[in-house]
Length: 404
Image: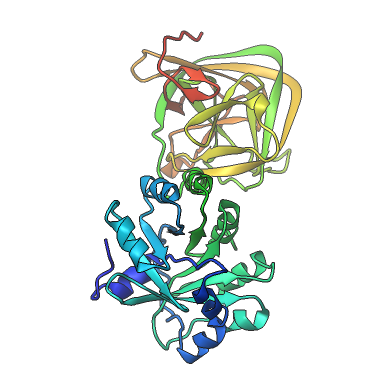
């Protein structure tokens, strides 16, 4: 749907995306001079008195490949930038898209309303020109040149924090897009994905899915402990993450994929050992652990650079990177629990140590977020994640299965 004349500014402020013409096109030479044009046009952002509510990142696509267009639309990205109005009209006749058109350093919608400007940044001086002030509200698409991307992007994020305008960066592949979206943790407001390879669309959508931008919740349920037995030695896995966990957070781990226990991190202080808020003493090598994409992995398969899902007491989850995995032989405890219906039993092995705990549903005045396995007893209630049991290479499938 095109941006209307009356809502052009609002649309541009909430979801600007754009792209640049290929280097061989005539308009590209105009873009190269966008820094000086930016000065003459007084193109700046207007700072907001209060930080805006967190918005979802936005993606606009620049391509001349119909397969790329189809892949983008199927994944919810329907705004495209064109250098030719004829191509834009042709594509609009076959798909429901929002076409934008580039003309020199400016970007217009279908009603010829300017929604953005393009600024090329290849030096510190050009970067200084892209700064917010109170002159007028427009949006900026930045084409980072000269080899440097990370530091200039971080400087832009810092300069525009709390502003009502939108800043996007041109990305020529999904990896570049990730750099811009993660600059200074907050990232730029979005990216302009300028590609002709459908794989980059797929990879970027997968990135958004893994990063859980929607901040969705996993349903957790209470289960009652029915057995706690000391069983002997086993090879257990400590998962050290590249992120800090807070009280109430941990990994979903279980002997059966149909029921995963929320195993608490070692973020809690103790008298005998310093807290390790990056670590989850997760269980033995055979256990399942939840990973992005609705999949599971064996704990033994985790290694540096892999990703897992960190979940909190309320089911909110985020994707984190594994920094290190430690497998050592330690004494184990077998824990079994039943759901409230009593129809299903879940199982997990954990190291027999005071620093290993399961997350409980209790909160509020009690202040208890986790129960150490050394204090766990029959009748205690802990949190589990119920899901389909049958798995093939970590992917849930519909088939007959018995696990015991």
